[in-house]
Length: 65
Image (cartoon, rainbow, N blue to C red):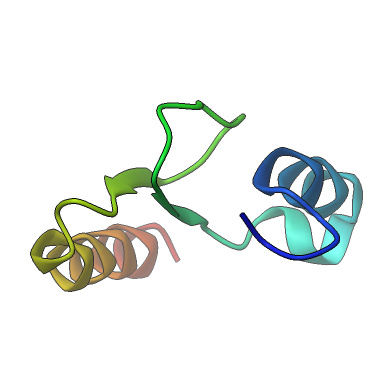
């Protein structure tokens, strides 16, 4: 429910831009919509898990780099 651009459109644009495509995305959502190639999906009904998910995604990215 972002203004002007929904999550799917954002992700499609991000993946189309080479310099941005590798940036991990965590979806914080009120819906069950799945987006292409995201690092994680966190429901807005479970905000406590957001920081834990960020830590996990950053740790995985650091190991890969």
